[in-house]
Amino acid sequence: APAGPAGTGKTESTKDLAKALGIYCIVFNCSEQIEYKMMARLFSGLVSQGAWACLDEFNRIDEEVLSVIAQQLLTIRFALLRSPPTDTFEFNDSTLKLNPMCGVFITMNPGYEGRTELPDNLVVLFRPVAMMIPNYSLIAEIMLYSEGFDDAPVLSAKMVHLYKLASEQLSQQKHYDFGMRAVKSVLVMAGALKKEYSKLTEDVVLIRAMRDSNIPKFLADDLPRFKALIQDMFPRVNIPEVDYGELQAQTEESIAIHRLEPQPT
Image (tube, rainbow, N blue to C red; front, side):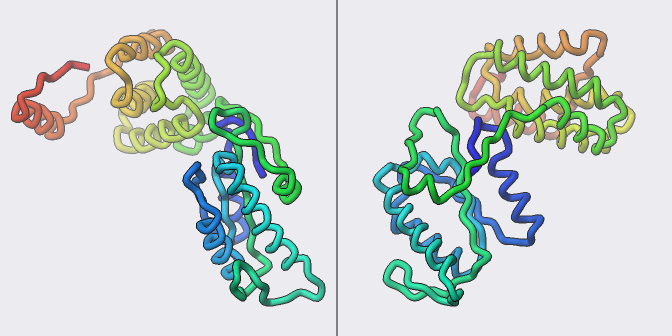
């Protein structure tokens, strides 16, 4: 049961462990709409096939449903611990094949709004694992090296610091993300741009990746602030404008057809 703030790698760690062991892992995003019958069907498939389930944001489920889920998991656990081992067991008024490779993992964000406390009979069924916020700078440095960047230590430090400043100085919007997922997507984009535009300097490539990844989701008031942060982090870098060619022309044509007014970015 990995628990910790968003972006600490709870779900990815579970998926990577399953991948390393060659086990099929299903990631199931939980919410308040989850019912015990839905979970019973999921558990039936898991125990029959020997697959894993990663129940993401598990503590978003209503407390009444969690109590029933605890009984369902307890039934599966008793069947797995039975001596001598059995190939079948009774679950939800059905006789199911029991594959001992099955597993259930839950991830939680404690302290977030809309989360519930797990019942005691459910807590005892899982082994807690505390997840910390990772060292973004070190991860970014390694990823940049893997994408072929030579100046990875300096670029990773600047990028992580820029994202930290952006999260503090830009307006607080629900769709803004400056966590590990956003950092990873920018670094992957930077690697692709470096392969496509090999003549550009590494800092220009990284700036373009950050700009192309973030500007489409920023509000108009936040665009000047984000551009100012980039200039502060890379003061002596001349950032060339990007020619989007046919995409730009078609976009402007569609704007004109729908009688909209284009806004320069």
